[in-house]
Length: 578
Image (tube, rainbow, N blue to C red; front, top):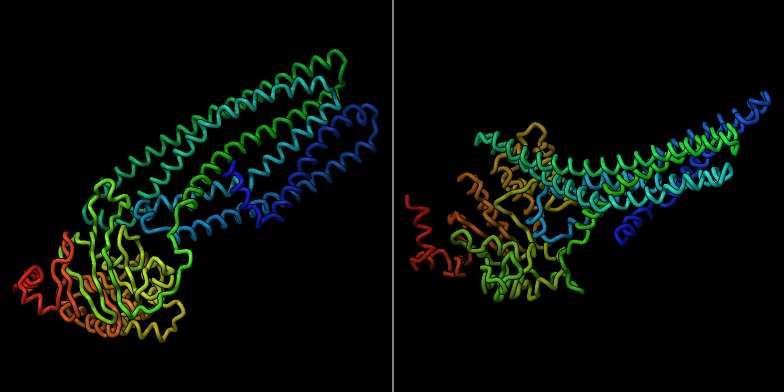
């Protein structure tokens, strides 16, 4: 019931249009109630008495009712659907805003295609329910009540006989509800899996072709597709039982009308006009029942989709301190105080190994510190903890003397520039992607940032220059070009803190030298944290820290660590042994 209330709350912004739609639906139902009554009067009175004048008058009235009804139907079909579209749009807006506030762990645990399915497929079903649901339910109730009143005027006993079947129909519908809800939920889950696999396969099309794995991908997709078809078949089986049962009830209802109505006419209790009127009202009585069947299917689809929508909306968001403050002074450096982290936040109770364990580290303001060491030591994870992409398990991280958990995420992230090894570019133009560093930047500032990142000349050589469309995820650019676009973003953002996670890994040696000079210039006067496997890029760092699975193993300048002859010296000699 609480879920239905939340669903109804989405009608509030569209209240006026929804009320107008319901008024039109009411007038359509009332119009339908006139037809049997007028028909009965024509058969019993105007035709036997050869009253042509009254016959034409009432036929004219009936034609007028039909024309008005046509206008009302247009309003309901067009503007009523606009209500559903508006509600769907509002829900899509809300769920997108919600996704922007969810922790990164949510996206680690949920497939992109599954989330897409919830935003597109589920909300489409909700939209259909939002428009047709209340309208079908309202029309059905009006027609049922109206038909009952009109039928009682013909013959109360006959009406009670017909309506005595209603409790059986209602009981049958309620009985089927649970199994329908379960099967429709299962179908939703399976189509989400199909969408997720499809999104993944399309994104990895080049890899599957390169490894001649098209058949493998096809078999994998067919497996998921078959699961979906089986789930869909189960839902249709339940729907078939429901629909067949309802159709049988309606056929039996019509049979009861013909039997009892025929006997009432045979014994002279009702006239031929009353009998025809009765048959017409019963046909009208069957229509709202059919509408209720349709509504029930829509309700199951829509509320199953809304339940999945609510699951996203009820996810815990990134937490902010009650009185989150602005970052006071990023220039005072970064302090790691006994920091521990694991992706499983229940660590400590189940013995899960920490990614980072009891790490203490101070990065002096304005200095450049490099992190090196074997993979799995937590270097990249450390970079993700500073902007609070993940919450630390224990200890604290302070910037400018302030615990980052006491800062607003917006203020924190606004002061941090990041360039990662795995570059993500948005579908759009080169200019739009560079401008992500500062959405208010002028064209001149964007060009200047591109020059500093050593990508300007390449962009100018393109037919459309900065307005060149780069394809989905920058697929039309090389790895080095994408990396330089992401570096240009950071130049444009101009933050006091830099995090460079393998920022030059995708560059050739010649380009790397140019970018390295630019990054060193950018790092001047800023607090910089660099993760690097290519040690040539960090020789000039103020301090180099070697991190292994056991924590900090070595620290010092390039020359000090080489002289020490430890892990760093071995790594360096290995890379430059030729």
